[in-house]
Amino acid sequence: MGLPRLFARTAIPQTTEIVTTSGPVTVGVRVNARARSYRLSISARGEPMLTVPRGGRWPEAQAFLERNNGWLSARLNRIQSPYALTPGAIIPLRGVSHRLVSLDRLRGLVTLIEDTNEPQLHVPGGPDHMRRRLVDWFKSQARADLEIACARHAQNLGVKVAGITLRDQSTRWGSCSSSGSLNFNWRLVLAPPDVLDYVAAHEVAHILEMNHRPVFWRTVARTFPDYERPKAWLKANGTALMAL
Image (cartoon, rainbow, N blue to C red; front, side, top):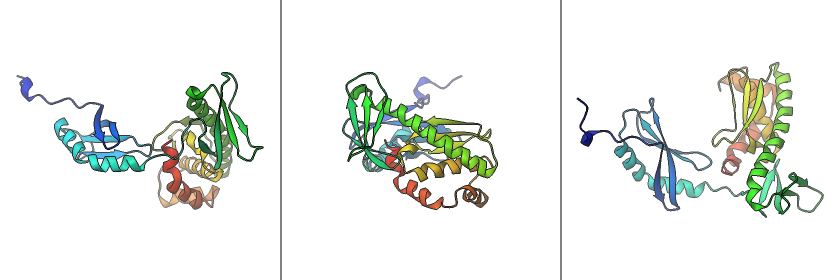
């Protein structure tokens, strides 16, 4: 005989909502078989995630979330990107600040204007389409830079890159599959060129060493000896770019 409806477990949803000091916030929910306790985390882009251990009860998870409302509110208030893909905003491109200019015409390509006192990016399509058009353009620029960088590091390390994919990841700058396919975050094109170059070297090195043991970092150093400086830059400044 099954349990009476009165005692049935409440289903665990994929998302839930909590009211923070900044207003209502959607929190992702996932069940993790390896988790031993409830856990609340937040990605660099400000996306909260509530982890529930297998066998956990939803009322207990909700109570845990409410107890950590203050922590969540404080973290969300801190993770605010200084950048926005809106008309008039200033955004970095390869580490150099550019002002975004919206053009009323619907057709045309994003145009880089650098022969002025203030570098600009002219974006057709009007304000409503600015973000989509800019992201598409940033992806194309990032791909061009990454293909050159990865080819150079692959040649230095004697490996072959199976393919490059640009993603809109919320927590990772890059990843490498066992087949040698590399994934990168398009926001790398916003950072100084040596930062993108470092991440490319990092992921190409993973083709040889799928770990972060000392031998991996020695492999990175073989193709990019000065990797510590851009690595430190990304640690210090990456959150602002990732939150965009």
